[in-house]
Amino acid sequence: MRVYNITDDYINYLHQFDEKVCFNKHESRPYIGIVLQVGDLKYYAPFTSPKQKHVNMKNAIDFRKIGNGKYGAILLNNMIPVIDEALIEVNINNIQDHKYRRLLQNQYIELNNDFEIIQKNAFKIRTIAFLDESKLTSHQRIIKNRICNLKLLEEKYKEYK
Image (cartoon, rainbow, N blue to C red; front, side):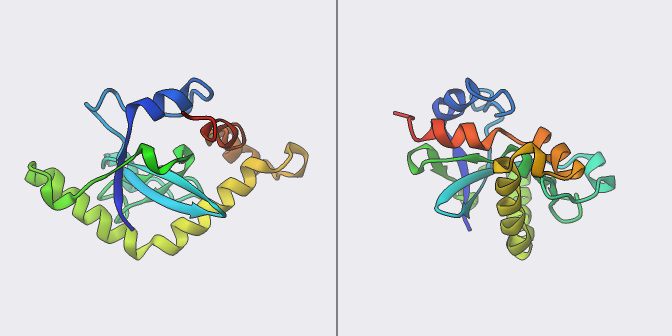
């Protein structure tokens, strides 16, 4: 498992097709996350920084606390298909801000310990995204409404440059 940023250009491209694709905010708050293999595609799943509310939130298929929320969460609801050219590998040890570097190190350790569940959840999310509405349970419909439109994004990411 490696940690990545993602290019503004790629995020802006996907966002024009789905408003749920979060902006990088011109690198003032860039995406940072991991890449998951779901079938034959790579998906980028971003982290969110720790917030007090994470401690009290429950893990779900599309939201997974990192270190019980102490280190933030991984937002599987915001996962997007990704091409290698849009990924920028982050060397955590080269981050100058000691506090941020330590946070990323802790996130990395916790996610490694939880990777199997995260990978399974990513597969479940993609499955839900592609199922017809009539085949979904009410809980799955709620999840489908929270996640990015993976069906559309998979079509569009292939057309990127």
